[in-house]
Length: 170
Image 1 (tube, rainbow, N blue to C red):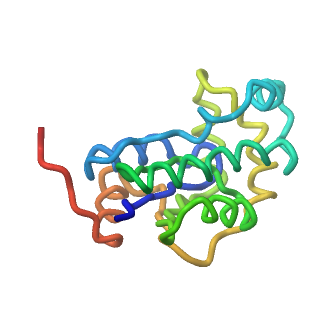
Image 2 (cartoon, rainbow, N blue to C red):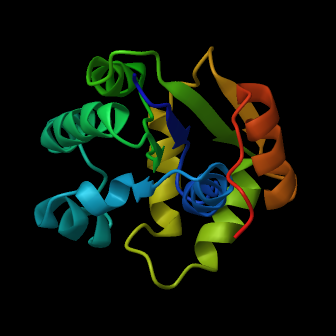
């Protein structure tokens, strides 16, 4: 039986990792950050302030699609991944047999900029946000979650709307 895969998506600074980690813990599934699967060349390019091209993303997306298939056949997973374009989302979906559960973390660009300005331990800097916002093709399916809500409320909304069972408290 295929296990659920939940993709928490959006631009940098929207809270993908924070929401994804908390969601995974609450539903008892492993969490993966799509950024961890980028090549060293992609990370260096972004760290230098250059946006990735579709060609840069090709192998990264193919790797994630393969991993999604593996996770679906084993434990299920929560994956934080920007998935900015519909073509990227279709590549990821191609790795799975069942439909993926898409969660789009959406928010005001000013809030996103402020979050990124306060981030000092990540290669994605605030000056890259405009490029991501220009690239973003907003999904017309899945859940749209407002990032202005408290993290706990965002996670609760995802669990409720996707009808996810929660893990027993440790």
